[in-house]
Length: 313
Image (cartoon, rainbow, N blue to C red):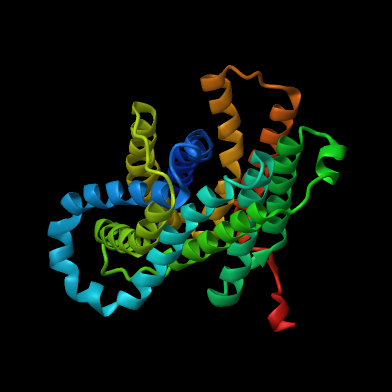
């Protein structure tokens, strides 16, 4: 691949990752906004059922032409579906019932890139570089500054709760999904890939959805709830997953995972836009740290300066 092609792929990957994080940043806002209207598994099932319905019509023809390679790789597709669809957002929605917004965003956005780096180093033999670690630490520093509002007292008061464990679990399974996507067989097209995991993930959610509906109060549908599910099913699922998987294919799982640190930054901007909140100096400082960290972690030197993995020492 020529140098211009490499550059084009890199910039395309960065843009796709940023688009995804902008859309995904609304996921936390919606989850918090409807948690009293719909239980967590039901929210996840409605979201992914809608996404599966859309992808069915978009991808059926392509799936039929690739079904042999799909059936050959069914075990791989099962694990991708389980981690990226069935468990990831369901854990977030469960966590939202038990933990504060600061814990939700802090644990979820900072731990997933760390998990992805470790998993990629162990299973994909991706290099952990000194500059990449520096960039990751700057990202974490930016997120901590944003969510603690620059207050040491707020940071020191941080405690784990059952909800924190759920969001930590969501970050872990999503990091597995991000790394697994890097191993997608080339013979499976992006549309067929999403066709398989959206439908499989929804079916895996079905038993838990049935049980939850049997033991919780009926869902009271409203325009607000329907609009939220449409956003999640179309924007945060179909569009975002196309963009995220395409970004992974272009810049790798570790680099792509780092862009997850932009989610709380974009969430802040959305809060200003939608809720009329004001941007403070803390927002500017934290945003600058995250952006600087991403630039450093994705620089050429970050891919050239290697740290020897622990298992090789």
